Length: 291
Ligand code: GDP
Ligand code: MG
Image (cartoon, rainbow, N blue to C red; front, side, top):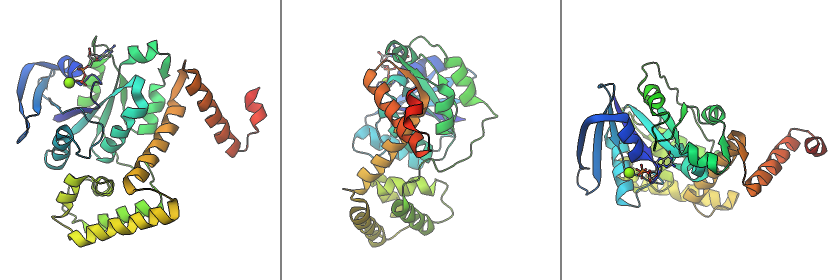
């Protein structure tokens, strides 16, 4: 199997890569660009790990992001290993959502558990896993703690993955996604939902790819129509901002549900308020929660 390693910059990808792979390693450049490509063999001597550049989003604004977009479109990793910084989940999870929407089996390596702990952040790994719908393995890539378990989970033969829609983006976006999905040929093996969402949030690599199948006017009109609707009905500035906000809402829900304890007073307080508001919607009087 080919397994791709993905994450934000500075989350510990290189450290993890070194723990997971043995001596065999290929180092070169990604085709056409001076971005380093590293491929290593897992210690089981069967599976390969491909190191991808650190990125914040799949949309190619930088050279590194262009490499990843190209990889998503044209290479076919069997599984994806997404490494997260446990102390920076709010920022890191935006990429995770896009990786999950891609529709391939994913395992999350929850790194920097020591840093998170020192900052008083306690993550409920099982709850995080339940929210994201994929296995989450806590690790400390600097020392190697948890890396064997992570290797076992990602290379396990039993791993099965059922694609589900992680986020409901609202009627307007969902209608546009459906339209696009219906315009794409059945022969495409990539997730049409992922392609559609990436296109709608302005990923130019994906637009070029869709132009192989859909007329440019059709694509442009679809975007214009959606933009109008979101402006009129949702007061949204732009499609990509709207999608970003929907993802932020989802991430907020995930964090409130899976961060058990945080010494950061401000976070704790607002989280409690959020819980109270949610519970109030459920009909539980607020004073009971304050007891
Ligand atoms: P990359 O940019 O994603 O490849 O991240 P690196 O592997 O280069 O790690 C960035 C920095 O974080 C380095 O100084 C690592 O030693 C450090 N680091 C990586 N994993 C951990 C960890 O689990 N805990 C701590 N405390 N530091 C880590
Ligand atoms: Mg690195």
